[in-house]
Image 1: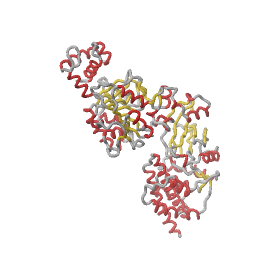
Image 2: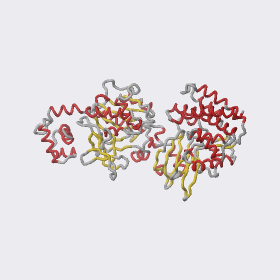
Image 3: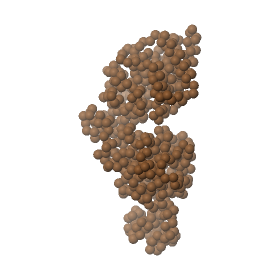
Image 4: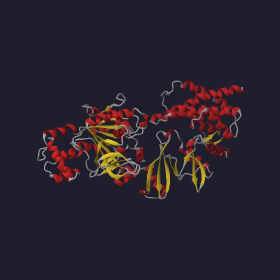
Length: 606
């Protein structure tokens, strides 16, 4: 039975009184295809000569009809700024109903009550669904570093010991049995897209163009990868998988999930089975269901201008500051999530801006009033644009967006010299603020935020003891006390072109305070993950020559101390699910290695 015949068999079952012309309208197939298919189905015993479904046809429908569903709701919803800072996308209210609740009710309407919801980001907010709707929750703990291919792999059985379901019925295993719907959590469907009867696997596509999708439906009704000159079509994401197709697909998902090269991939990649140029399941047209995908604040606003979730404090702050209506805040786009903050891009008229929103736990790390004092001290000095708005009580900051920005390449000596020149300009101005950045005090403070939890490093106590030994040497050395940046990360030096001229700014002054300027050199080196040879070259560039051994020893001490400082910071941020990969490990290594380099140099001088 081919796809056309399957569609016609289902409509004969659902609409037993329909004639050939009505079957053509219901299925979308030409009248000639309908007539030909009716004859073939009758010949094969699925229908009789009056198009009445026979036992063979009924058996096929029973064998392939849906029993379960999985809803994918683990991700950040990064494009949903600023709403996603407080609410998972699946729990957005649209026209008085939460997105995921509407999807669950639509599944219930066709008799599907065994539903698994894969959760991750703000997973606790989904717990009520267990009691209200009887769903299972499957926790994806890697939601922050992997895309939804991993969610589907967990559902398929990958990492069974780590991925256990909570709540719901204990009657069966969809991962083994197949015959279920796959449903993205961010869809609002005006008409129910689910059915009590299905006969084959499919993936839902829309005719609307989407240049970013990379796929389209060809004349054979197959979902294929776009050729270079072709424009893609919108992928809806709802899919149906029969037992037969789930058999090979779950193996494909588990295999791909075991390869870190697929960490950023969507689960649909597995439908192409081994990188083929077409999906191994049929397409299903989305027309007629009124399906809206809600990926952004503006899409929600366009669908339901009265949604409670549009009452965003951040958007209201923007509107109030620029004296515009909230609908004038457009092109809201998530920027890459930083180590400390979450920021988004927006437009007012022809000008783009960036709004900074503090990240989880940041209120314990940053004194926003002190930060405001820093901006007052550097205002008009040429280090960066003055903020359009800074609200110390909230940590909100709005700055002008710079077009064509690139960050400093820490391996490019020409760029490195320009950055060190700007940094030295800051130090030579001897600017002053009312607060200090105490390296050793902050080290202890961050450790205190662990709330008694031990370090993840078994030799932490010994490493800390050694680093604290260096404090005496640091305090014995002369210092040109002044405003230092502290977060002198190569990524915070921004090159851009304005009026045909290359300019350089230094951004992110959150940690800035009074300190020895030589600490900034240490910070730049450890942020850049320099090896010792690169670190010494940095000293030559900043000073114009290799500094005296006592200065070099002091900077090595700073590298060790700052390495442990930021390692402790990373251990605190890890409590909020923030991972830093190589960065955190390298900071701890700086603490150990540069303690040794500093001691060796100090001993030589003695």
